[in-house]
Picture (cartoon, one colour):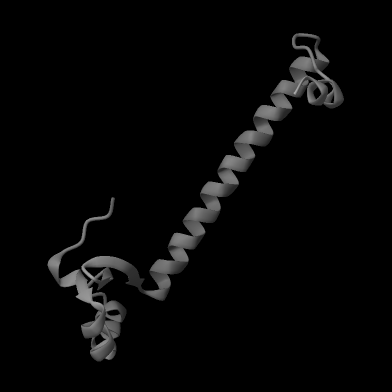
Length: 98
């Protein structure tokens, strides 16, 4: 869970009125993020463009790493099957058992 400082929690009505001020705070890194509140609940978080791009890159890297791990595990399993150390089951046989 993300923690927010008091100066990072902004009611939506105030955010709308002082949008330029809050945007300047994000751009000059006075604050790392701003949480916009509606009915005392966080509805959105505003971060700088650079921070957003870093977050997207980190997520893409994590997804790539997970995919790479799955592929590696599948290739390892295939090698075991080829070496006769593990039995392979045709998909139609497995499907019929469902």
